[in-house]
Image 1: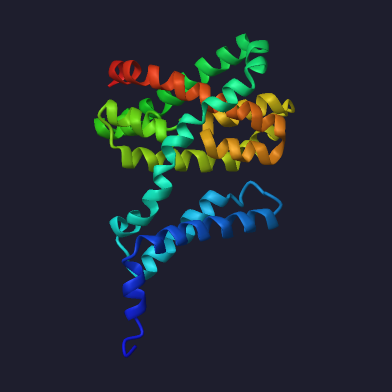
Image 2 (image 1 turned 180 degrees about the vertical axis):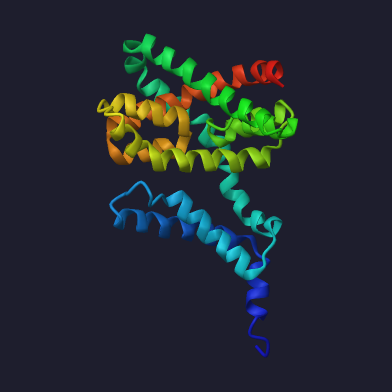
Length: 238
């Protein structure tokens, strides 16, 4: 009790603390997003990341210490990735009814997502391992990290790029679709899920249930397609 920081030193060494900080940051960020009427700029993922980062910097906590607690959330990436199959099965009739346009948009979108970032990376002279890491940026984190590892990328860097892509996509998707005068919620949602994976899908559900449904379909299909196209496309380009 003579040292006012002794309690913090004890708590900071326990994994439960950082799990609690992570969950509290998310709950607080989601509450603020709700109060902001789900405005595109009030993205709960972005706010939660900033909140946790500020706590880590203010307390001088190294990332490995934080991850000892956050790994429980990280573990859920596996089940969440497998759960991608649920919207595909649940909405299989919607997929079959719109199979041709969905497949066309899926193939074009997946190729553009990979080619654009790799070609830009080569233009700026990025190292090969960085190019491999950013190639699957538009796929949900659990799948993207697996792809990155298989093609010689850096999974940790891939995770950062994936989250950044998702946040950016979730922020701009609504104003962009409004500017382009795209009013079909199915098309808007599919584009959001294809380009901005899970974070974009969450944003689509906030806008309209139909948009969220098609975003979930795009999220699942893109994970499958990108896993097949990234290795040969990246090998050919790099």
